[in-house]
Image (cartoon, rainbow, N blue to C red; front, side, top):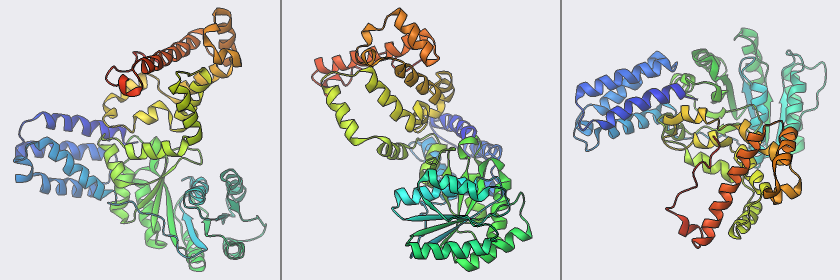
Amino acid sequence: MFENLTTRLGNLFDRLRRRGALTEADVDAALREIRVALLEADVALPVVRDFVQSVRERAVGHEVVRSVTPGQMVVKIVHDRLVELLGGAHAELRLGSPPAVVLMVGLQGSGKTTTTAKLARFVQQKLRRRVLVASLDVRRPAAREQLATLARQAEVASLPILEGEDALLIARRALDAARRGGFDVLFLDTAGRLHVDEELMAELVAVRDLARPAEILLVADALTGQDAVNVARTFDERVGITGIVLTRLDGDARGGAALSMRAVTGKPIKFVGVGEKLEALQPFHPERMAARILDMGDVVSLVEKAAEVVDREQAEKMARKLAKGRFDLSDLKSQLEQMRRMGGMGGILAQLPGMGKIRQQLAEAKLDEKMIIRQCAIIDSMTPEERRHPEIIHASRKRRIARGSGTTVQDVNRLLKQHRQLQDMLKRVQKAGGLKGLLGRGLPPGLLPR
């Protein structure tokens, strides 16, 4: 997500920071590079033009030229303008009196049905609202069955499927079921098309007039670039959208659609899809996204994710064991699984400031989810005794563990070495009188897998 833009801007800002003073010519040269970087990221030309002009108005003048750190001031101006471009503040869902209707619209193939299930799960689990979902798509084969299956996986209620109904009849039945069932929020997943057509729009307008939705959310695929922006403009003109959900943002190294969408439509991006799993949906925060684009990290989101996946009771139990210097391979597996739920080592490091500059090194180190899965498989192939006492694992046991986990003896050795290093660190903690005494001495070399 935004990898190309982050790299280009990062290199530019590094050069600016090294300059002791900036002239107006220096600022103009930097703005030309920013313009090229945004265009290569597939940002719409009018958006790029307005963005560069607004940055220039703020950057050229006494504010930057006379600043003690002119390069840093340019970075701040670009950051602030990016935040404005992306919408300023986080736009929350507007859910009025129950049952509040959320109408999901978009083209076929944009991920609308999956996003409906993801968003329903989010509202029920995070906002504590009772949710009902209903599919109005009677044209695409098995569309209603797909939503019903996803709803079961997301543990939200879905409207029973009846044959022979059109979209309006289903919407009317869903509204009645939501009122009678005491649901707080009703999600209506509408039919999509391969292109915007009059029949689609007429059906959406009819459903909108019947349901009177609190939110009309357009689901757009970020990988389609400027086509997604054009689709958003058309839907807004014909139906009147209130917000946007961008899907597959994790798969777009350019990210121009996200930067253009808010400026072109005037409607906020409310959520972004960052994976296929039902939990892979995040509220969109313009300031955090701008910071990630400029390689300033997103520590707030990282902390929020950690709070979600870490079991407090298990963490306290682990802390007691660590205080006694005990850390067996079962404990290591527990930590690896928590890391995996947070997006793996690569996902964690990507949200820390400055990590974009070593993106290639992270890729070469193979700090990915597959590595964590392999390590967990190795531990699963051990006996309970071997997990408690890894020192008994010799050559023949290593060969058996490698065969059972589909890995190599070298992989087993690497994991055991990592565990020994962690144990050595714990011993140093105890000898130093706790964690406070250890600070400043550094972590053992080679702790991260190579």
